[in-house]
Length: 163
Image (cartoon, rainbow, N blue to C red):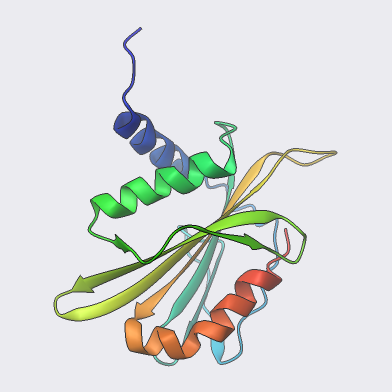
């Protein structure tokens, strides 16, 4: 069997994560103050936006690869860097309302002269009694200036996520 390099494994892991969505929302997200929940979407289990276009979205995926938190965080980081996102500091440990530990990575990107801010927060809930191993990915982004004003509401929503 041919050995896989880190980039191939990372891409495979990210594609696997995206393909495993089963629309099985085993979490609760409080819609941030000043935001409105958007109708269903095949790519996300939850999405909300404010009037200025900042979006918060959540995916809940079965962790078929049984990757740990660092694995998923790094796999997503590699993909985003490959798409031109620039890290804005180091990964930050976060904890949600259920006590689940996660990692948050923050990025900036210029898209056609528009400075954007994008956060990705990953939580992994190991399997337990009547629960499958799951990965929760919270994405938040928007124009940098607008996002900065919405930052407290976004941070609160992520902290209040219950899994």
